[in-house]
Length: 105
Image 1 (cartoon, rainbow, N blue to C red):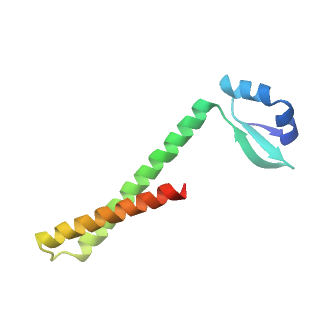
Image 2: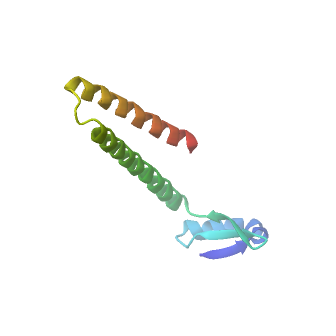
Image 3: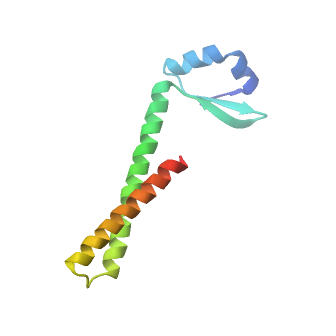
């Protein structure tokens, strides 16, 4: 990945945007030698956002299955009515966790 100073990025923004839009690597922008931002193409950004959202969905499902396993292990002697009530509780908890994750973003 190419790195440029913030001053160089300011002076060459159009050229850098053209580079990443034409398929070249992303450009790291540094300020006082420290990475501060990255310029990527719109297509690469969309792919990164989609990957992050997919990971979030997978994590939510993993949490749901873990929660279901924990509840099941604690409640081996439940009636069908009790099972139905717990299923509702698990669903509500999963929705709450997913909603909290979306709010955090």
